Each structure stands twice: as C-alpha cells, then as structure tokens.
Length: 210
Ligand SMILES: [Zn+2]
Image (tube, rainbow, N blue to C red):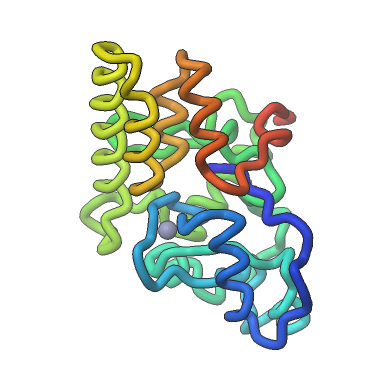
C-alpha cells in the first residue's frame, strides 16, 4: 500500500466534502487502500469514522481517499487508531507483500505486533477478501495489474524507450505497489513510479522500522 503524505492543511473546511479536490490534487485519484484509479465516485474517507468521532469529522489529518468498496467495507467500525497501520503515517509499502496470484499478505519480516496491525488494516477495508466474497473485484484487479506490470517490463526489455509509456499505463490504472514490486530490480522505474504518483511519502519509504 502506497505510503502517502497529504501536506499542510489547505484551509479550514465547513464540510468534509470540500476537501475532495485538495486530496485528489495532492494524492491523485487513487483509493488510498486498494490503490485503484477511480474514474468517478471516489470519496473523502475518514480514518476515524465521522459517525463516532465527530470531533475529527472536518480534520484534514483524518482524511484519505477511498473507493466505494474500501469505504463501505470499512464503514463506521469503531477502532483504536494504533490497532492498525495507516498509509498516511506508516511505511505501508514495506509492511505488505503483493503476490502474482493477487494475494496480499503482511511482510513475514514484521514483528508480531506490527503483523497484527497490518492484519487489522486488511480486515478493516476487506483487502483480504477472497475473489468469490468481494463484489468490488479488488483481488481480480490486483491480478490484472500484475499482468499489466509484467507486460510493461517485457516491453521495456525489448525497448528502453517504452519507460514513459509504461508510466502512462500505471498512472491511468493505479496499483502503484504492484508495479513497485514487479519492478523491484529496476531502480529507474521505481524512481519514475515514485515521481509519477502525487503524494508518495518518499522519506517514509526509506524507513523500515518494523
Ligand atoms: Zn479501494
């Protein structure tokens, strides 16, 4: 999961929906959890749900962007913030392993308490739902994204000049983490991916504290 930074609060909001254009500009139109590019209907997501944490309902640091599937699965579940890892405060890329078969797992290098926090996050938004249980097709979309990244890698092996085109493909579909995984041995592509997705928390990516 891409670690993100939303930057300084742009201004005080009278309604949380006013934050949407700022979040889209700073983070891109990607779900902060499943990482898909969302054409329409991407929502301002409250990390701490607005229904049971009214004090933070308009707080910039409580906002992310989420697709309908991640947002509705998360819903208004009450939670203690530290029970989960979060893409706006942790190195969630290091914490998760994306696999070719669409599976998404905690990194086996994590200590036990961090692995539980990762599991908390996956359960919360339903990213560990099996394909048959997920009407949102997030697992299937991960497999498709992996295939696209592998196809781009083959294209680059044949023609180095295909790198910008590969970046156009990924920015139009999302799934930054899968592409970072497929291009794990290609520092140039990783650096292009970090550059191409707004709000990627570069400094946090370099830290592996768990
Ligand atoms: Zn999502």
